[in-house]
Length: 308
Image (cartoon, rainbow, N blue to C red; front, side, top):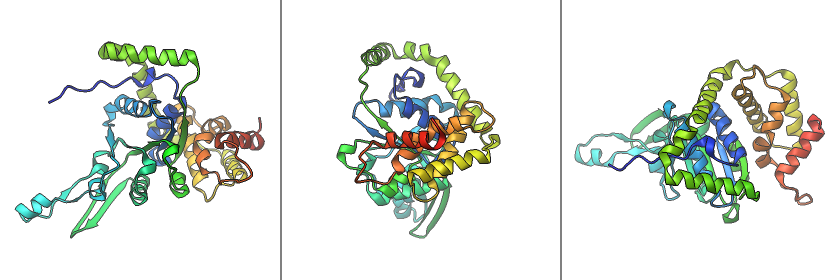
């Protein structure tokens, strides 16, 4: 057996604040619908995801990687051929969805995954249950996970229908601030020189974040969302021209998770402001006459609809 791999501490990650918060919100409320992180290579997207899973490992959370070449049977599960051929038994062999239960299912280069597979993943992530009916088998098992996709938009974009199904989306860019880049290099070097000591140095901060997530999960159902907040959420989505009601649901759930994570008893307009860019930026219709960045369009609508 190989040695256990030490994971970089979540609290020690410099920058990537938008991705860190999106993952925390999705970990508090899985019904938000997962996180999509698009941006430059080598910016630590997978490091952030694995760090959060390690931080929540006391809850059984872990990261299951879904490779691009995975078949549908490998993902959802199928008949155990060895049991069928050798012993004549109809036995179910679980797939990656079962492995990811209570954890994170991570797809790097999700924009290159076949569309029908992404559809399956999103459906199961939304329902929290995997149903397999084939070859005389009828199996149903829990599959409650946070779906996380990452990719480089230069290699191809996701279909709008699939973009809309991800709860939160963040844009990841290589840091341009010199002090930030220096600190990233300094911490990474310290971690690689002595991983155990570095992890111990950040343990108390990681533990505090884990406690916040657990408390937020416990508080979520009792966190109130006033009608006037729902009205502002609806106005913002109308102003941006989002299709359907998925945008309102996601924005409301993300704001509620933000309130619970902050220890607040009810959702405020500030919580809505904080999560709106991640909840809405990927749901905007393409406008041939307006090439403004999606995040800027969301921020502009927030100011116009909710006030400066």
